[in-house]
Length: 169
Image (tube, rainbow, N blue to C red; front, side, top):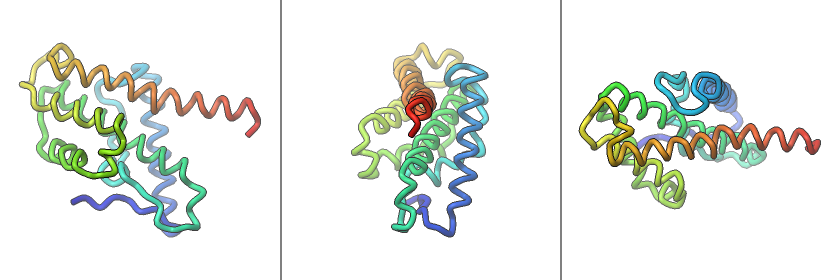
C-alpha cells in the first residue's frame, strides 16, 4: 500500500513546490504539443505521493483547490509516464502495479472519469509493445482518454482562472 500525501500546516511548502512543478508540466504540454507528447517534463511531479492527497488538518480546509490541483496534476503526470513507456515500447512493473493497485482503492472507484483513465492505461500496457501503440485496440482507447484528460484538467484549469479573473473574484 502506498502512503499518499496528507496535507497539514507543517508540510504546505512541499504542496506548493509540487504545484509549481505541475504548472511547469502543464506549460510544457501546452507549448510543446498542445496536449500529451513524448518526454513532457513530468518527472518532478511525484504522482505516487500526490494522486490521492488529502487534508488532515482542519486549518488547511481552505486549500481544497490546491488539493484538487495536486490530484489532477498527478494523474496527468502518470499519463505522461505511461505514454512515454508506450512510445518507447517499454513496460515497467512498478508503474503497472501502482496503477493496478490504484484501481482497487475505493476513493478512485468513486471517481468514474479517473478510474476509466487508469483502466485504459492498464489495458494499453497489457498490449504487445509496438511502434504505433495508438493504433492498437486499447492503445487507441487510451490515446482518446489522453485528449480528454488534457482538456478536462489542463485546459479547463486555465479557462477557469481566466473566467475568475474576468469576473473579479
